[in-house]
Amino acid sequence: MIASERGVNNLGMQGHDKSDKRVCVGTVQEILAAGRKRTEIADRDIVVIAHRGNFYALDSFCYHAGGPLHQGDIEDMGQEACIVCPWHKYKITLGTGQGLYMAVDPFNLKKQPELKSKGVKQRTHVVTIEHGQVFVTLSSVDTKLDSDHYNCAEYRHTFNLG
Ligand code: FES
Image (cartoon, rainbow, N blue to C red; front, side):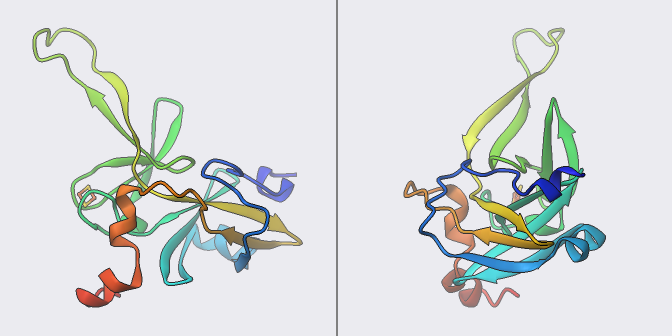
């Protein structure tokens, strides 16, 4: 059994409230085959990503300046799978939405760069799997996150984004 069939990948990462309504976004087979699927839930633009047998859901547009994060490549930084924004190459963890970077000590350039986190910047959402269907429950975390600005219908319509 692959991990995705067990049902959950990032439950609880950003506040899962059991009373929230989950939305079916497609079949496991469909999303595994495509690798990702962009969708809209309650006026929020979301990308669902299948990676190494797990499913993740994040806001589609990058917290930095609204770049098309949903089109980014996926690469590892340390132990973390990250999506890389096509615009300015910011790296965001799939599971938690943290912005990661390699810190260089400008006073000691011989020192190895260190992996650091800027904290959670991109909103992630809860994914559950049931009977071969993929469901997303929108994050219920009240704290405003940087990606919130770029992923609401008002912003996308103002700038005529798809
Ligand atoms: S818009 Fe994504 S890195 Fe700048």
